[in-house]
Image 1: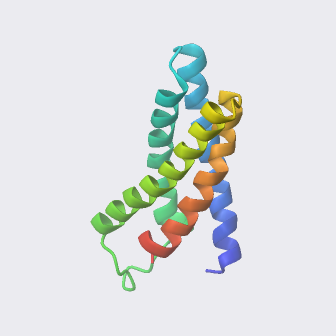
Image 2 (image 1 turned 60 degrees about the vertical axis):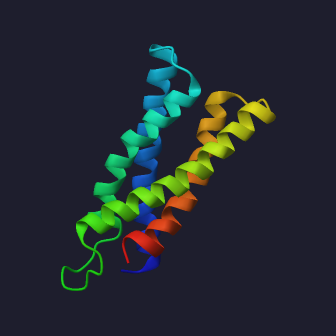
Length: 129
């Protein structure tokens, strides 16, 4: 698959993940009156379940004979990629809100871009190789 197709697919799934994340953040913060940190954690976990399925079968599909990693290795590596991307995003979120006093909703939105970049690179290079 061409890298441009893969990036397009990643963008489509990433957009859906962003919408899922934004919806969960809004539900938790606005409807359930939870803090921005808990809302962030829950939203990213929910979006990750969606992300793994689409990543495995549509963004980074592997020929069954050419697979280097079993499903269990892929799950483990996917969780590691998630941890790296989430940590980068979470630190960025804290920096924006706590240091620069950015609006919590805007900071959540901007963090999606940090998360997406780190997540794509990690999954492309590690998880689905």
